[in-house]
Image (cartoon, rainbow, N blue to C red; front, side):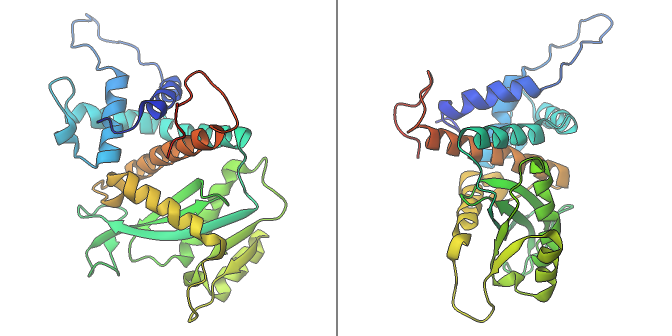
Length: 278
């Protein structure tokens, strides 16, 4: 069974391929081993992200784990994953429309058994190593950006860098933005920050029963990350730049899936799935 259905893999690869920088063969004699196809590495990275397998287990006689890591790092240096996420967001906004008037931010703690730059003692897992993702979504739960930090960091200090991810939409941000937050952000410092940024806010009150409101969409998106991408639910990467790239890759898949699902009832195209995607 493939890691992702074909109606996602095909358009994703089509755009990903266009972003890969051209590599020139500079070997003087041209007698070295041929370069592994980018498509093979792409599919290996999809399997690593979705299935959570290690690079060694996903490698085979056609492609080694070292080759996968080396090509992944080349693409990270070229900004391919971030550019792919940006293109998916802009395409979704053009066809369906992002709901930027209502934004939601929330943190999610996952296991990080290998430690690394973004790992710290988890307050919800007996002090074991963990990573926190501070996620920003629009009113429908479309991921707009994410900030990673050690699990022992509080959500509130991560709010500013998370909201700064909106700079990628500077040219079409609405005049009035309302930020929906849970009780973990209920402090005067948070309110002062949102006033400084010119944002309205709806913050759950500490000590009162759960107040979900419009904030449930970010919880669903966190579930999409953890249930759909095993590499994010148990983060075994040690460097922050690789984790950021994998999150951008996962966000691109989520956005594309939502785009196809929502456009399925209003648009027609040659490769449209016969059934509405789940």
